[in-house]
Every structure is written in C-alpha cells, then in structure tokens.
Amino acid sequence: MPNTSATTKVAHHRPDPSQQQKRAFWLRHLHRWHWISSALCLIAMLLFAATGITLNHSAQIEAHPQVTKKSAELPPALLTQLQQLQKTPHSDKDPLPAEVRQWLEQTLSVRVNTQAAEWSPEEVYLSLPRPGGDAWLRIALDNGELEFELTDRGWIAYFNDLHKGRNAGNAWSWFIDLFAIACLIFCITGLFLLKMHTANRPITWPIVGLGLVLPLLLAILFVH
Image 1 (cartoon, rainbow, N blue to C red):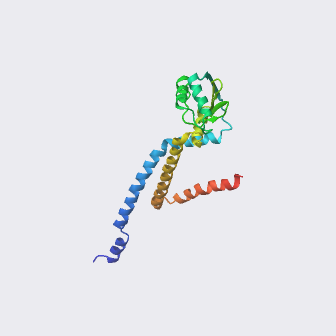
Image 2 (image 1 turned 120 degrees about the horizontal axis):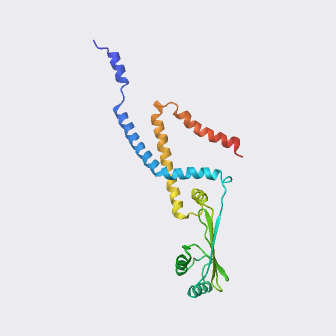
Image 3 (image 1 turned 90 degrees about the horizontal axis):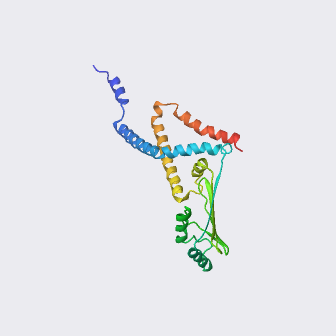
C-alpha cells in the first residue's frame, strides 16, 4: 500500500511550474539588459574610474603646460567686414562671420565655430576654453592685428576635464547623461539579479549592506 502522506509531502514541495516560468522570464530579461548595459558602460566606466583616481590625486600630479602663440594680420577685406559689423546694431556676443572663421582655420589652423565673441570699439575677443587647456583670440579693429594663444595642460588634464564635462560641448554632455542612464540600468538590473540569486548566496545582502554602510560611516566620521 503506497504511503499517501509521503506522496503528499513530496507533492507539496514540488516547484510550481508557473512560478518557475515567471522566474525564468525575469532572469532572461534581467540578464539581457544587464549584459547590454554593461557592454555600453565598459569603456566609459574604465575612463571615469581611472580619471577618478587622477582627480583624487590631482595635487600630486604635476602638470607642465605648453603655451603656443600665433600672430597674424587679418586681410583688409575681412577687417572691413568686421569694422562694418561692429558699427551696425548687433549683439555684443555675436560670433565671428563665417568668412573670418574659415580664414582662421585655413591660415592659422585655429577652429572657431559659433562661439560668442566679445565686441568692443577697439577689438573682438574670443575665449576658447577646451578640455585640458584654454585658448583665446583677439583681433584689433583698427589695424587687423591678430593674436592667438593656446595653453595645453596635457592628456591627464584633458581626460580629467572630460570626467567633469568641463568645456567639452553639448555632445559630450549628452553622452555623459546617456552613460549615466546606462549605469543606472546596469546597477538596478544587477540588484534584481542579486535578489533572485540570494537564496543560494546568503552572504549577498550583508555585502550589499557593507557597500552602503562603509561610505556612510566614512562621510559621517571623516568628511567635514
């Protein structure tokens, strides 16, 4: 005669097929989004992690700025165009005319896009900050004398400024936002995967808790 109580007990502990299908569904999708977001984040995460170290020790990393100076004289036709533009009603932050920008790039290899220029009766001045350096351009409106100066602080400063989004333009700003979203997806899907595997890894939540408590204690005790 079969043992009905034992049979009932085994049936009671038999996994529910619907629950297994639900778990498999979420595992499949979480793993998919987790690996896709991690692949998108990988290179940029390495960059931001490395520059986090260099930024944290920026005082110990010596920079040796290199300064490049160029001078020239604006052609009379372009100078006349600037003089006429200066005399007509315009904003004090209007960019240089396209012809002047093209001449600067072809003659001096100085690329000036549509950055706002500072117009005065005596000169036109452009501040041209960039990641890892600074630059400026001045054009005298009486004789067309042109001065350009570029300061380059090296590759470490360049990547540090990319980390901060300093003077890197709108495209890089959008990239940082999209990268941050990908990191959030990576972390959130990782958190759910931890939850789903925690039954076989009982030390999961203590480690997660340590990751929360440790920086919190450091901030409370040592950051003033």
